[in-house]
Length: 79
Image (cartoon, rainbow, N blue to C red; front, top):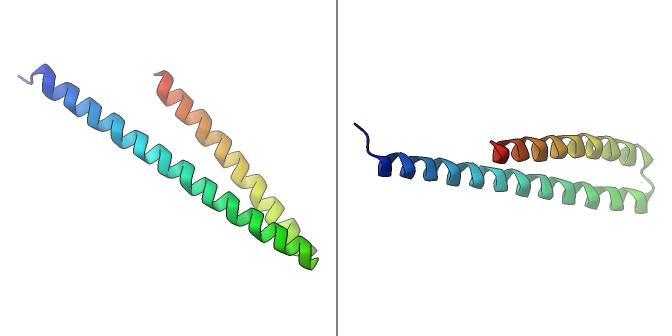
C-alpha cells in the first residue's frame, strides 16, 4: 500500500511541473509579443504597409492564443 506522504510528494511534484510549464508558456508569449511590437514599429517607420498588415494579423492570432491559455490556466487552478 502506498503511504500518504508519497502521494502528497507526487502531487506536489506534479503541481510544480505544471506551474513551471505555465510560466514557460507565459514567457514564450511575452517574447513573441515583444518581437511583434519591434517588427511593427520598424515597419511603420519604414512605411512597409504589407508587413504592418501581416504583423497585425499575427498579433491578433497571438492575442487569441494568449487569452485561451489564460482561461485554461484559470480552469486548471479552480479544479
